[in-house]
Length: 451
Image (cartoon, rainbow, N blue to C red; front, side):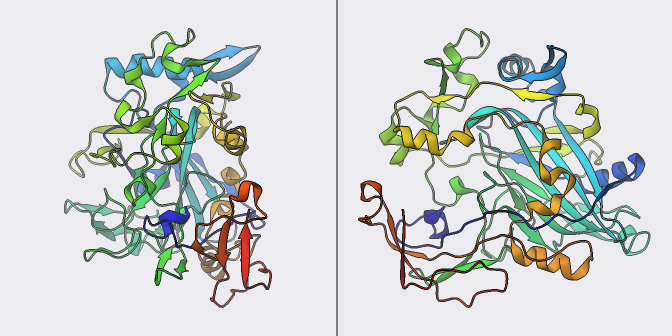
């Protein structure tokens, strides 16, 4: 993340800590008809890279009964999806929606949840994957301006919002981890978001400008940025960059993929995955098989290639070119599933124990969406304080503030710090920025050591 903020460099950037959420507002569920109308109006286009193996699908295809519970077992999902993908290019394309109402306010949030049968990334691999896009909508103009407004996409088509479905005021696309800032855009000029999915990990960045298939962190080539997150100062780089997860592999970071194993066997060799072949995982040219290559990846690893477009089946056939049309389904249809299960996986090569401990949270299953706080209270997923403050100014149920830390410093140079274990610390300069009212206090020292 530090190198990402420095534009791919290794010597200068900002640092970030996201450590908690503000108190959630009181929310209610909308009626079925109203929820459906909002979902159809704001359902996004999903763009996947050519090497993506597990685009959005329907977990109901792989559910089973176990001890009186309905579960989706990781082995069943990966094995079953691998079979289905050999029979049809994009099996069971589906996106689930959930709409949340903020009482006594024109604000609603429509969530779009996408399930993938597997997740394989750099230090991140696990059975199942859930990603979410929150679309916060203002319905105060229902039936008036919203009936005629629209926006032009890159191919010149118009995406108008039907009467009564309001205007989006904030997009929040889920990042790679709850510990890094999400990819957000306040007051977008488009009615539907485009989601650009990171290959393998499915982390979702936004495409809201005239080039919806590529991510722009800042204004470039006459294009507006795709995110409006609060910028941080990169001191030694003399630049200011929006603090968000973005799309690391397309922004100068050569992140390779690792092949996971279980019980000492790579997944394509495991007895419980008889239908999984090496070609069903991320292609070999993107993967490494040693810890050294993971830590210092070869420059030959290619970046993102190609774009595969998934559009909602409710959108007009002529509205946009699509490789697949996904079914838009209310999430209540899968609430009977009690759990998404699977054992913790391991690297297929030896890594230091502290590394595996550090990423253990990224190599376990994710559970069900409706057990997450952001399901009922989507504002808890707003990771940029300026965005939350903007909504708090407009809508009474939303409160500003929260336990969110901001800039800690800027990396001066990547050298060892004596007090860090193995002298593997990073020396930081204190920021020269004026603290905002919702920053946490930063110790008054001229330098900090991050161990």
